[in-house]
Amino acid sequence: MGGSEHKSLEVVKGLDLERYMGRWYEIASMPSRFQPKNGVNTRATYALNDDGTVHVLNETWVEGKRSSIEGSAYKVDPKSEDAKFKVKFFVPPFLPVIPVYGNYWVMLLDQDYQWVLVGEPSLTSLWVLSRQPQLDEEIYNRLLEKAQEQGYDVGRLRKTSQTGVPDETEAPKDKGFWWIKALVGK
Image (cartoon, rainbow, N blue to C red; front, side, top):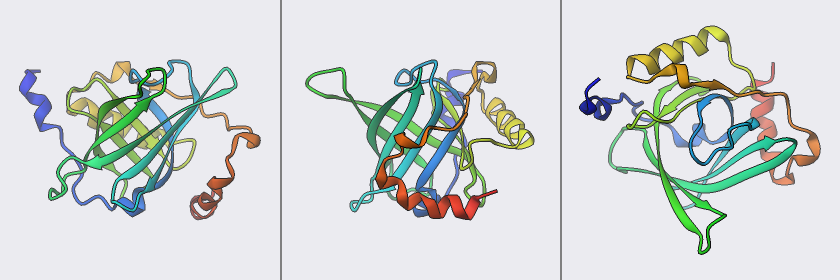
């Protein structure tokens, strides 16, 4: 694979941000630097801000303790149809707080917004996210094939354990997500 291939990472066009909001469970990932390696029940919750940016909350549980990071995402080129975003995280350990930027390119998205494959042009990070804590194996394998076609080394992808989060860790502000759970409830 030549270095120039990365530029041609295919992305979704015409993403409906409002439909994309809400909670997504991490099914598998090539862990990024900002992610504890042994986290379980990892999930992301997206909420639309008034200014059109997206509030990002990533949560994971390491040895029973919740660990989270917040940031905001915005479209790289607001005029483009391409679903290419930048995510800016505020990394707590540093003082003053230093923002860290990452790419978030939506490569493949279910037409009903039930699962998504997210990557970035350097091919070092990859995420499979789903509205449910589990994803059909057939769909998962299809997403892996797509990533491989795009030049990813899918052997580095790790499945995330989703065992369910104890209720007391649910923040009251999550109440709004019940309708999503009701809609997709199996």
